[in-house]
Length: 153
Image (cartoon, rainbow, N blue to C red):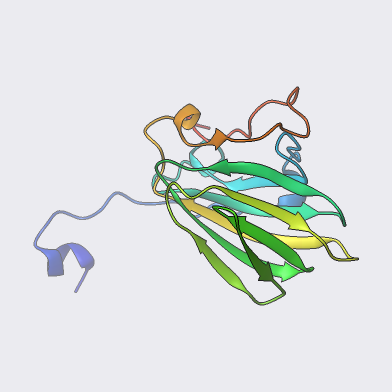
């Protein structure tokens, strides 16, 4: 029995699987570190969120910001990090996952001695890409464009 048969509705539209390698995505350094949005409405035409990878060298940080419409999910692959959530520090090590609730100010710092590697996902999407992210401190590279998240590919 198909999902459409069990739900009583029509068959869902066919979704095409799309593979994206982080090495094929240009880094964005606007907010700090090396952020690569791999899966997004812009890159794979997804509709429920976006995600990718972050690399932070020792001493680097991602500037404080918040998401008025999205939760952020982080999973640490390598490195020792500190995430500040509304002013409260949370230590993160390899294997740790963290939920950043909607509207919570957060800032990520690599205080360790090795490059950190983090996988992230945000969901749901903001109504428009320009509404999804509010910066609350000076950006490390404000001349760089925002990561390309929204729109069709």
